[in-house]
Structure formats: C-alpha cells, structure tokens
Image 1: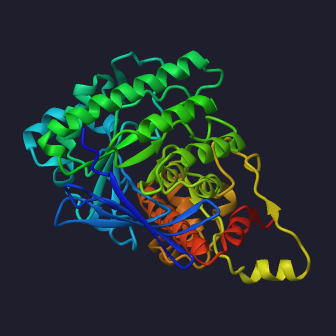
Image 2 (image 1 turned 45 degrees about the horizontal axis):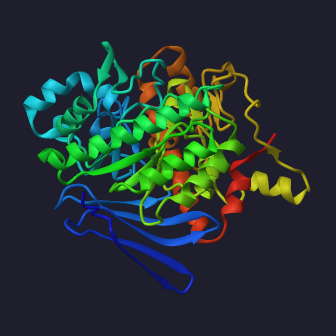
Image 3 (image 1 turned 90 degrees about the vertical axis):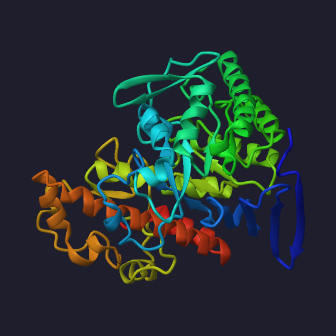
Length: 436
C-alpha cells in the first residue's frame, strides 16, 4: 500500500523548527511546526477540508464540540457570534450511526445535511462527554450507543457510516475498553491487536471508498496503562500510512496524571514528528497543559459542554499578567492557593468553574468573569444566569455555552502565546493557582 506521507523533509531556521509533509499524490493536510520547546509543539495544521474549501488550525488547539453535528444549545447564527471558532468541528459515530440510511440517501454528507458552514469535520468513534457501557467488544466488532440503544459495528459497517458522513478526517475503528482499573495484561494486548487489525481493514476500505478519497485517516494508539503495549501500539501504528495519530484511553478517570504523562511522552517519542497527535477524553485545563508538555497537538472540547450541563461557568485565570487584586496580594507577600481536584463541593465539578445554581449568586451582579468579552458577560450577570438556572429556562444553556466556549478557546489562545513567548511556566502557575 502506498504511503502518501512517505516524502518528508526537515529544515532548521535559527531557533524555529519547521517540519513539512509533502504528499505524493494529493495536496491535503500538512503540519507546519514553527517551534518545539521542551516537548511543546507550536504550529499550524493546514490543508484541512476538501479542495477549494481548505482550513487551517493552530496547534496546540481544539476541535469544536458537537452532538449529532450540532453544537448543543446554539443555532448556527448564535454560534457564529463567537469569534475565533476552531476551523474543525468534531462529530461522532455514536450520535450519527442510527442516521446512516438517511445520510446515504442524502448523498452529500453530514456537513451539508446539518447546515454546517466554513468548517472541516473530524469524526470520532465515541463522544467523550457520554461514556459508553463496557463489555460489548468482540474480535470483529465494537459497539456504539445511540438514542435507540446499542449498535454493533463491523469494520465494513463502520466504514460505510464514515462514507455516509463524509468527514474530512476520521480515526479508524478501535477497541478502547482497556482503561478500567485492573484490566489484565492479556486483555490490553488483545485490544492492541484488534485495533491494529481494524486499522489495516479500514485502510484497505478507505482506498476503495470514493466518498473518502480526499479524507485523512488517523490511527489509534491503545494499550491501557501498560508501557510495553502502548509502545508496541505506537510503533506498529506508525508503520501504517496514516495522516495522524489518536491517543485513546487517557481520560480523567482512567489513570493517575503522572502515569498519563509518562505514557504520553514515551508514546510521542515513537511517533513521527511531521504528523499531528490528537488525544481523546482530556479536557480539564491542568490536564491539557500537561499533555501539551508531552507533545500533544490536538484536543476535543467536550469540557465546556460538561461544565454547561452542570449549570456552571468556567472562571479560571489564564492571563499571565496578574489582575489588580492578584497583583496586590502578591506585592503583599500573600500566596495563591494551588488548585486541587478535591477543592470543590460537587464531586463532578472541577476547581476551574463556579456553580451558578448556588444561592450565593442570587444577588451577585458581576459578570461571570470580569473582563470577559463574550455576549453573556457583556450583557448579563451571575444573578441573572442563576435565576435562569433555578427556573429551568432554556436560555441558561445558551448563555453558559457562549461563555464557556469563549473562555475555553481563550485559554488555548493564551497557551499558544505562552509557548511562543517562553511563558508557559508563568501561564501554568496562573492556571493552577487561585485566590482563596
């Protein structure tokens, strides 16, 4: 099988490293890294999308989260009141599999079907915000869960769904059920073997499927928390003609953060530098920074959706220059508290958000975040959003989605700027600390 990524070259310009990929038969996706600093990779992923409608995405960066090809709570017009939206929208097989026949009859893909515009599509197997029940994987099949229940997929069915969706990028079918605690080494090894076999079959069908001719396929790295299997999966996947790599099984509940960091660094050392790396299931700001330090380029953005569904607002600080209150505290020698995962009252909450359902906000007339430029913070107060939440008004989801999405995208922009200006440790300190 021809590897369309076989011709690569590297040139060094002063302190910047540029890595470009030259395709042998089609000018599509290309990763250009402008800087690599202590493992962090800064650059642009270009050539995303069909010919004539190509997009670029700055890395480290995130996709735009959607459910059934729609951003929850927002119409397309409302969504586009946000500036600097990601140029790639993520859709998932589990939310679209039950619509396969309709999409096949429509023939023009889910992007046009759902009225999406000015975006490329990346298709994942599962929605990270909606974990699937375990125990439904065989040597030949995986299962996804739609609104009507379980749907069992062979590779042939999986690829037929991809052909109906017509994404610009997608990852191969994978056995990702090895993240549970105490998963045996035998089970992990079997997952790696199955995922590699699925990848080979997906690659074969990809070449034969007209609707996917211009799409990029990413290979999936599995292996649970076993270093040997992670490295085997990475090395074998890297031998295949894939456009990029997906690191699966690293979501927050899967493993200790130190173990995750060690595995990610080891895996990325085995992967070619000129291809992008996407990690699934990681969304919290502290985990994102840790993964970026390990060499990850791309992330999902399900985290703001989860925060919205809890009736919460993101309010962590990612501004390197301290706000006046913090500056006064620091000038007086007062320290900031280190954010800990146990520092919240609700077990599902993270320390990076505030719970606007709490009665303390019923007479709080400040914006959700001081200085935030989103519509919600410019026009409304914490007290108003609290009122909407306790009266179950649908507008609460709209306003919180606008704010949480804007805040999260602002964090990624600040992250890229910090890497570019050698201020990553300053940003990390700001994000991981708070005023008591």
